[in-house]
Image 1 (tube, rainbow, N blue to C red):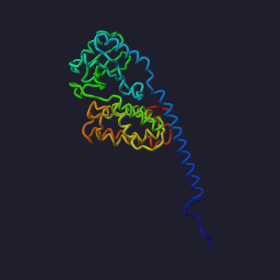
Image 2 (cartoon, rainbow, N blue to C red):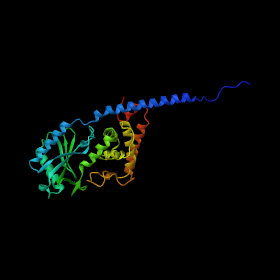
Image 3 (cartoon, one colour):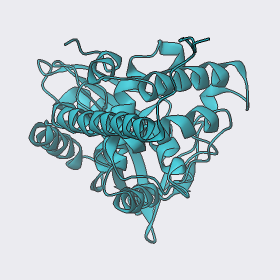
Image 4 (cartoon, rainbow, N blue to C red):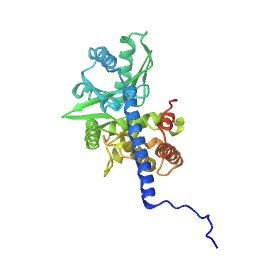
Length: 306
């Protein structure tokens, strides 16, 4: 009897190896293309209003300097760390006051004093509102951006800012976090700051109840770099930060500037419902990006359409 046909075709080892190489090369091409796409996004995301921002800070300084013992303005927030994103990040500045002249003034008194001076001296046509909050004075400009001025005192080389409740002064280290972030960014081929900007864009697309502050995102990203040994490329660093953040966000994270006990107290206790919701949102977007088989899928996740 003759042998019948049928059965399953099993590729030879050489064929399988060639197929595996082709798949690996295709994946490498995708990674290269995605990294190119992410790099192309960064100039669009970068906050290009540096000149206007500096002009406004100088105007604020001039408006206050005549009536307050003012030492200077120190940029804080995402602007000082170069992680600001156009349309998302606002400007924060530490308004450094002479401690000898204002040592007896409570934070609330200084905030209201600053707000009143600015309401009186800034042109009304360029400013929508000036409000004194629990920690800072917020100036909202007619064209949209905000500047938050946080009054602080400098004494013996240390800077004191309002406490969490805004009633007392506490010592802070405003440059510590910026310095740590800068060193971590350098260790990963300067891919951390771009990853933070990209993550801010992704989180900004979350429902409001699942969003995070820019400072919280920066702290999670810095925490993610501890022990990281992967590639210093935008795609790899972004996916790693999202993966780490989706787990780390379940626990409160300390404020490295020591201004407050934790950065994310508003999310509630460890493993609480708000933290779980945020963790799920971060993990969902990470899995979507990690499993993407085309740049078009990355573009769609960032809100772009081919």
